[in-house]
Length: 68
Image: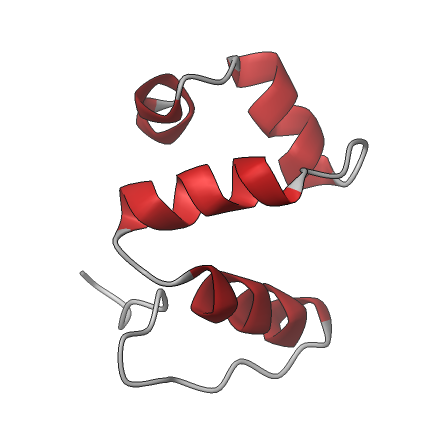
């Protein structure tokens, strides 16, 4: 919820994006990357890896170790 509100998007829209019911625009993805303090490229690469079931930690990764 905090991410959606902080980025200025509705909870419904962000939920639709998370479920795959809607596709975010590059502008939306850039807004989220900026908010998360990662590059747009990192956000895209890690999202693709998660979709393919093989996350690979990067230098500045969005992935968090379990328990944190």
